[in-house]
Image 1 (tube, rainbow, N blue to C red):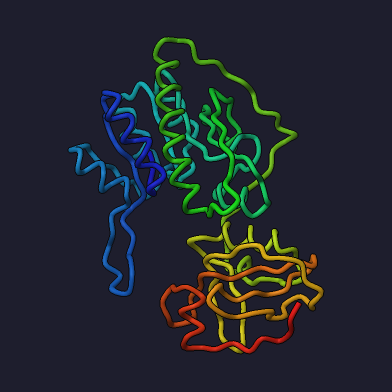
Image 2 (tube, rainbow, N blue to C red; image 1 turned 135 degrees about the vertical axis):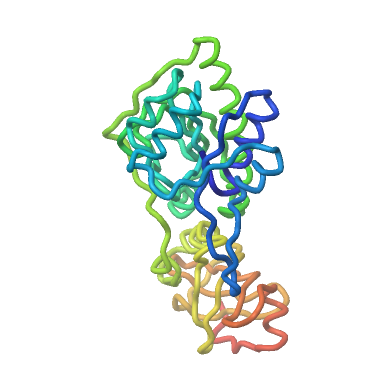
Length: 303
């Protein structure tokens, strides 16, 4: 059971490991782009290419999905970023239980956007957890965890790709343990949990009074959506890439330089941040240098 690209890696590994996939559940097709043409989820695309049977239930609690799952008689349910809450009667159907591939080290960052929030909060390490699913969101007993460091320039999109692969490795190991009876159950410390709620556009505006590192983390954590934003000379800009600059005594938000290296802006901790990639409203994503060629920005002060 899964929907986005993150989940494809886990399904692919189950197929490659030789497991019989009795059914693939994914979110209903959604309208996409300006034409609003219905688009398949990445999991559906991969499943159909493998000749697997795909199910896209609209409701999980009206009894029809439970009947379908019971008819399929799975030994194990594996969920990875499915995007639906599974009722307890479905979770309890398989002989070996129902497990989830979650992209954080639980109990930290339960919820919808753990990868983004780990970066937004300046974490230097994250990972994946394979856990038994429970009625409460992401609160089940842990089978195993795999950890990885977060690169200082790595954005959420790049980290998602790495964690998808790490999750597939962890899942493969966990399924083997379940099959041979060696899987352990470690209860989560329910007092240590944190939540990673869905992202919204209210997170986008950059407050230049924050530190250069915090703003750098904001930019990286909000890729590819909703993106960090700022207004420069009355133009709304999405910011896609930044690097931390040097010391400055200038007022936060002041433009220190604008040239081939990018647009350098003073931050609230006495350091600067260099914008290297951006997108103007109605324009395309480009380097800051390319943007400046058509939209020169006045430098407000030096230092």
